[in-house]
Length: 177
Image 1 (cartoon, rainbow, N blue to C red):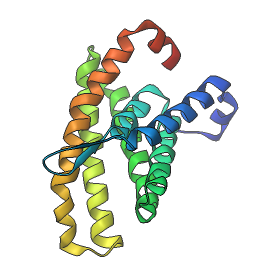
Image 2: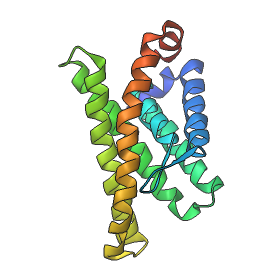
Image 3: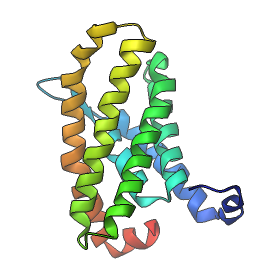
């Protein structure tokens, strides 16, 4: 997937877009929308969008670093290592499945939707495992599943719509591609 010789291909635009998406993921996490069960932070939209818009290792790095920095800045430093791994894996999963599905499905929206579902399932399971085993909550970690599920559902609904709208805009499409 990612080979060392690809490091020579890193150009300024790719590096700047990675840093920009990391900053957007971090800033978006500060915008929390209360839900009946838990909350939704806008950073999850940009985690998925970074996986779709940037090439695979760079999208995952942007999502992981931006989300981890948000956890540290918001006072959840104990979650920062897990967030680094989980959000990076979500972006990587969404990006990989989007690329695979684009070869089979002509329309972009279904590919975004399916890859978002797969990525967000990884997020729900990742945080459950982290809380249950590493934080030692055991079966008490199941209490966070409905909140994480609502957060994932919002990301699944809004991120594909956001990415489709961005790709229809010529200026945004040229900047991302």
